Length: 172
Image (cartoon, rainbow, N blue to C red; front, side, top):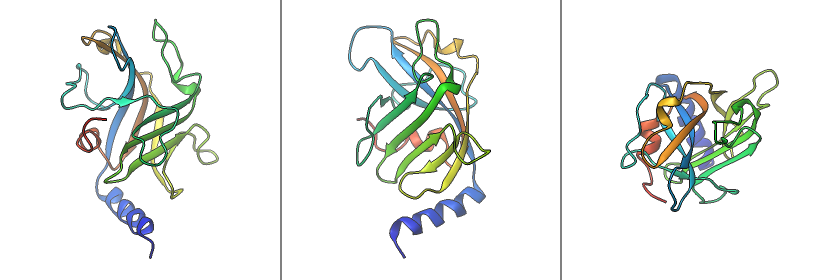
């Protein structure tokens, strides 16, 4: 049996035992410096500024294939304007590559399965591994977090939690 099929079967078993939900935020730096934009994954219940020492900042990228860690977003809803702008339901594709070991690389498609928009698929397997919805959470608490302000883009439910995602491959 191929290794990626073994992994997929393991994921399905784990998914039946554990589930987590997390929010995906688009971040913009309020001060000059690099990087100026990025993405964070936070526990769905978190309503306070994230600790950047324990919550990873994933770079905004045009390509997250292979071993490139980061987030690729296509569609008018990806980026937030000065007043928050950008309706998250206008995101067509959100591809997240958080870690190579273990493989944490998923893509959310607005069209998803027929009749099931916002399905999350594991990269390279075609397996549906989670469900997401555009987030219209009140993110005003994240508008004044020191150097960064964040805008809620998606809420996802799957077998991995924000803590698990943030605990792998620190840095970039």
